Every structure is written in C-alpha cells, then in structure tokens.
Image (cartoon, rainbow, N blue to C red; front, side):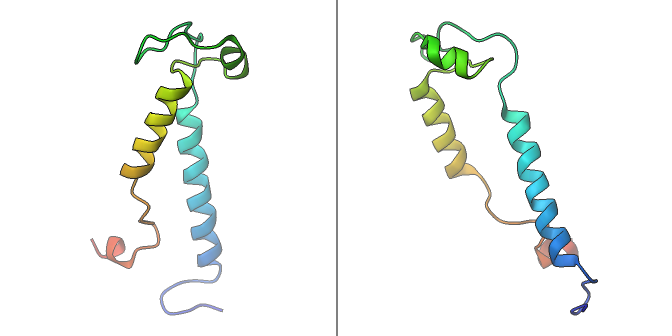
Length: 89
C-alpha cells in the first residue's frame, strides 16, 4: 500500500539503499597493498599477527582506534536518502 508520495516498497528500497551505501563505504576503507612493518602515523612497530590478520595494514592498533573514533564523531549519521528536506533541494 502506497503512503502519500511514496510508492509500494519505497521503505524497503530506502533500507536496502542505506545498507548498500554502508557496505560500499566499508569496502572503500579496506586496506590494500603490502602491510607496513611500522605505523605510518606514529612510527611504532605493527605486530606480526596484526599484519597477517589484516593484509595491507598501515596503522598500529592505537592509531587505528584514534582514526575510527575521530571518523565516528565526525560522521554524519543523518540519512540523506530519507530526508524530505534533501528531496526538496
């Protein structure tokens, strides 16, 4: 059943699109290439187990945590796809 201007299945499509966006963003952030022996941020050694577990790793665990914390704080959690405001602009 359509509601207002939305067509049938619009909510499911919006959810699917939001999930697809998150998966694509995560794939873009995966490290690529050869792992570094030392962190490119602080120069501390990167553990062998971390390098084996995550090919292409470039940051030590502490720097990675800081990067993820900063990204989480600065990320826009507002769903632009579902915003009526964004559709009017």
